[in-house]
Amino acid sequence: MSAIVECIPNFSEGRREEIIETIADAIKAVKGVTLLDYSSDKSHNRSVFTFIGDPESVKQAAFASCKMASKLINMTKHSGGHPRMGATDVIPLVPVKNMTVEECVKLSRELGQQIADELSIPVFLYEDSATKPERKNLATIRRGQFEGMAKKLQDPNWAPDFGKPKIHPTAGVVAVGTRMPLIAFNINLDISDIAIADKIAGTIRESSGGLKHVKAIGVMLEEQNIAQVSINMTNYEKTALHEVFEMVKMEAKRYNANITNSEIIGLVPMNALIDIAKYYLWLDGFNADKQVLENYLIQ
Amino acid sequence: MSAIVECIPNFSEGRREEIIETIADAIKAVKGVTLLDYSSDKSHNRSVFTFIGDPESVKQAAFASCKMASKLINMTKHSGGHPRMGATDVIPLVPVKNMTVEECVKLSRELGQQIADELSIPVFLYEDSATKPERKNLATIRRGQFEGMAKKLQDPNWAPDFGKPKIHPTAGVVAVGTRMPLIAFNINLDISDIAIADKIAGTIRESSGGLKHVKAIGVMLEEQNIAQVSINMTNYEKTALHEVFEMVKMEAKRYNANITNSEIIGLVPMNALIDIAKYYLWLDGFNADKQVLENYLIQ
Image 1 (cartoon, rainbow over the protein chains, first blue to last red):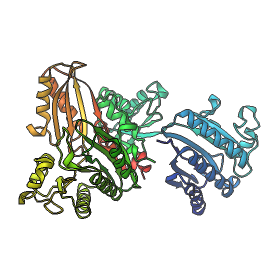
Image 2 (cartoon, each protein chain N blue to C red; image 1 turned 60 degrees about the vertical axis):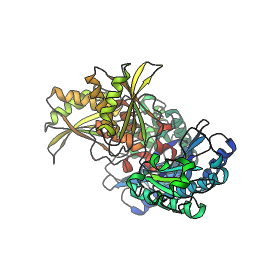
Image 3 (tube, rainbow over the protein chains, first blue to last red; image 1 turned 60 degrees about the horizontal axis):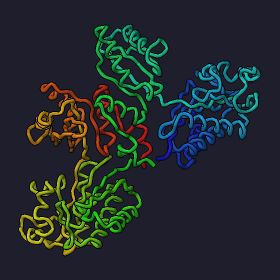
Image 4 (cartoon, each protein chain N blue to C red; image 1 turned 180 degrees about the vertical axis):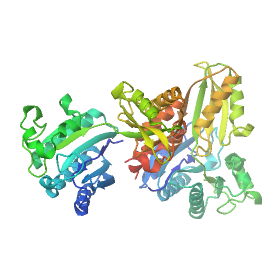
């Protein structure tokens, strides 16, 4: 079975449809890549594309889309509600199957090198690809945005990972990085008190001392009048969904609350769900690669 | 997403490797089909092949393998420990994805018709494809085996579903049928008393009044000295693995026993595992076809 990578590039154009479609076409033109989704936000003036395929094809499609964006988008004329620093703002690469984080980091470095060499756009590596701790967080890299980037690159601490410390005049700067698949997982409670959902979120999330690889906040679903613990799982292999679910269930009890149901928003890798089945059935020795029928159908 | 069928034909040859390989080659030669596995039993003198693909390709590969077997295997000279009635003894077709049982029954009828028309082998439809209740069970159709089949076909009750009531002189008779994927699921207990495993098996299985679509027996794992409830799930969509697991857990308590772990033997469809994750996480509104990343990778 060959390796599979997901790529979710963000482009600084969310209004002019012909430009968005031309970028989509550049991705679709690459054999071995499937474009799953793309959506635009007019007020952010930004579009997000999602595609998957084998590593070489994904690298090729990511480069082709970045090249096309650098031709069509002029950052000196860009305005929008979302922070941004380049025509192609960020290119996350996600190892989905039969690929280690290390292999994906290697791919991100190859892509960064190619963008700097062939398009003269400076590249920062972020998240698991970062070369310094302060470059892990995309927001830190992007601080100053397109308008402040020419000056920021002059600071030796902010020399790009690839390319000269000189902003591309119209395409700006791009961040390329590896991260694990992100799973959006919401757990609904039988109460309408957001303070309790907030307290539970505070207990389970990494930033306040809870489970590693878990981000969480309490939110209020106004229409249904219920409180929800809204969770982002940033590494389901290290911290699984069922661990979060059981911890929320336990914490809710302290507040005399109960879980009513949960939901997963958007895409999820098969193995994140299979891990849950294995946990609850006390399933030993199960090899998903060999035993799940669908794995034989993936080209 | 296109439909996917699994086919698990059984051939009456388990000793002469060149014949087994020639049948494998006939299957591999069909584009759109993936041969997952084939294995032979010398004492049974029988081989089982497993392949998957789109319905048309699977039908074509099933026919090609049946044709090849009818050329290479002479049932008048066959002996082996397993009951059998034809060179190709039985062709089960299993709807794996995006296909209803009804659509699979239609496919089995087309295949049966083609085998009777082009190879002059009489065909019985069995399991979900059966045209009479007494033809559901393969063992009932096969009673009398190859040697008794010429006479059996003369009985108007046993006229074949396709073809003339006249046995093929060397290839015999073949059964074609649709069934749901079968999942082999074993649950191990922390006791060494097979009588208790037997009692639990008796409580959960359909044949003695338990859960529908569940077959179960108690077995003793001699090496580990533990008792196991060994289960075949014949329709995971109607009766799910977690229902069986929870029922065994509850029943075991009555005998002061506990589950130590479970195991799935062989292949399992992705959705059988996703159903378990949905159940234990109280997951609402989850659409596996759209939300599981791997489903976009299946051609």
